Length: 271
Image 1 (cartoon, rainbow, N blue to C red):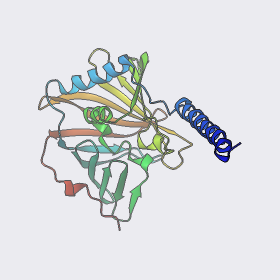
Image 2 (cartoon, rainbow, N blue to C red):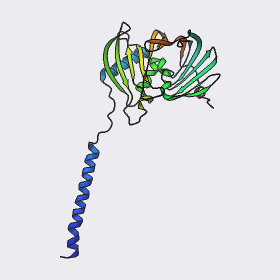
Image 3 (cartoon, helix red, strand yellow):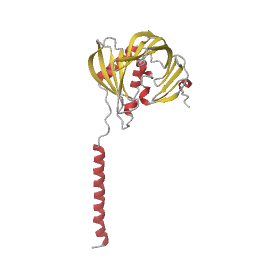
């Protein structure tokens, strides 16, 4: 047998083997499940959209705002403390708090997932788990707008419930499906409660992870005393509680949508 006759079948067999291996690899790649995205079921999505519509009506969501009021907190085992605050917002990710506390002026700045707090005695960065509740969460229309603009965010309809003797609609807002281990911090799981009669938000509950992502702390932010400002609905009273115990409240005296603010005001100055 000529040399070329002996080489030809070997070469053909090699090609078949390579093609077979490639086919098996391709099938394996096709059948390996990718992380499934969190879906948005229709009733949950409709509930969240109805809440936004109830707050904005035909008006556009403000691009900025400035709000002033009184912040009261109840330190554990100590009398309550009240002091004036001003909150400035730019978009749905940049928030600045300026408060005149008994110990001096305090500035808290949140930009997306990062933040800082500056007091007369210390300046420090905020952990990701500490930013929720210091951001746009205190303004429901901005919070919902932020949700609607987050790619891959999940929404699940839970049902009708009773909350503090009030009938509410309950929706769970889930973080985007991702392989990142920080997903639970970058967009925490939230429970969203709305009034079925007015569609206005009543409460948002977040599972915080301030220091350890394996352990959660529940924070409830309640909204009440809604008033119309420039065609938009804002809760003039915002309460914070953990374990059923109120730890702080904000009583807004004024809210100015689309007020003039500068991006430079949201730049922290940590050393």
